[in-house]
Length: 590
Ligand SMILES: Nc1ncnc2c1ncn2[C@@H]1O[C@H](COP(=O)(O)OP(=O)(O)OP(=O)(O)O)[C@@H](O)[C@H]1O
Image (cartoon, rainbow, N blue to C red; front, side, top):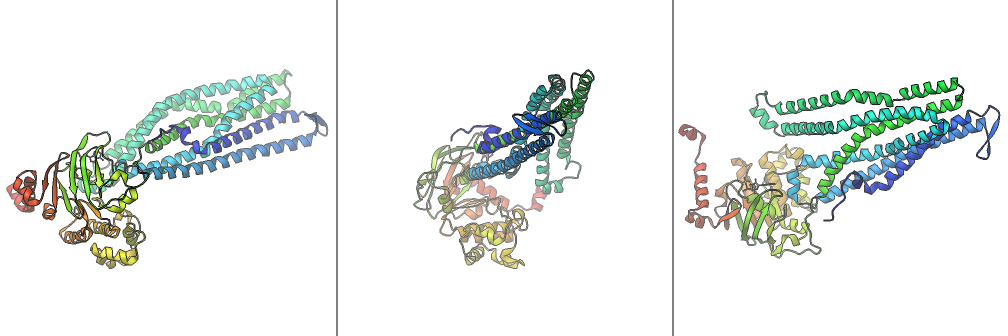
């Protein structure tokens, strides 16, 4: 992938023209305002009812005032238009970034998205993009004004009276130096502040997500502990920041406020007037210009924080954009059948040790293959590599005789249905949730799929039937019902390869019977790869592959593996014993 330029300015490149235009317009607006005030001094020299020659033109007192009015309107128009242009750029940037991010997310390995987490992705897609919007919309015209106005003011002041220019510069330099020191101190404090705020976010998310566990096991004394601790550290860090910088910040802000400049320029000017080395009109103009100069500099002070915040947002966006996309073939190959073959596959999650070592097996078209093994053996990883949640590090995976990396993503997805352990239902009607597997399907086809998935009767028992909203993440449905709904989805998709990841995890005895029936309908005539902890359900499958620590230990049919008296035989024995457990006898023998 081409190395993208990093940084705040690089990310704003698509709206460079709008930013430049906004800065230019605000420079013009700020400069015109100063010009207007400087001309005031000249105009005040013109005796009433008389005219003077200015730049070769005869200008009367009233005419000059009219000119000042026009310049003031021009200044206002430029400043206003600068904000319009910057807001236009901000919306454009927001749209471009969101579009790019979403397009990129659609092409990076799905595994990355799952491990990054929806919360973190949401923050980047919504909050960080919004931060950059605010930066372009509000800061860019401000930057133009904050730089142009003080410079133009200084030039105008020198033109009016260099001594007053010197007096107002002293005040500004003093205020600027103090604020500069405060800003430097703020770097460390801001870092701590950001870290403690992130800690609070984490604690809140953890608290909300683990609400069920918290309510069940917590007596109330520790449920808020982590949150309270995070809040305390936030408070401490804010206090330290305020304590250390508040006084100097206040002094700096006070010096940069119009009053001190007014006092110094007023005092010095009055002295010169008393000694008749300054007339009244330029004095008034200098007063007006010098106070505006201090005011224009103030935004530069808080802007440094704004820039840092936007920089952090730009970094997070660029981190996501830097994730390498899955490579797709220029010309897609189409799988020849529904077989799945692993050839010497090795795999490590990014930054972790290897979890699959030289895995090879074949699942012929229409066969059922069960992946079993202790927890952490690598079964889910094997299942997720088939639809390219991640790409293998070594070896290859063939679907229908074709390397999955040579198959277009949509073609691959058409060939594979995946029934996840954690079923996801969209906040939409039950019908829409099933239909998303095949948007062109007719309502009759949706009902047929729901019937085959044993969920039709339940849906019809709801007052709004298929139009019932599934609720946020399907919270209004039981685990088993959600699972049957996703099975209906997979049935409607009718992909020739079905991957089931612990598909019966939620089942209670009543639900289990229905889920088993639903799965039988889903998997009929399909190539099935199933990860199941209930060994009884996979007794009759075509092949059982036993994994341990990322390697295939055994492979064969149930009877053959039992006869081997190896790992499978041991797992089977444990499973059978577990079936005869009952709480009372276990308690008695304990
Ligand atoms: N996203 C991930 N990032 C890093 N390591 C991971 C990730 N997912 C799984 N692992 C690690 O890979 C190894 C294999 O995990 P996997 O989920 O494939 O095992 P499993 O046999 O399906 O386990 P279980 O039966 O408990 O679901 C484990 O050590 C696990 O910690």
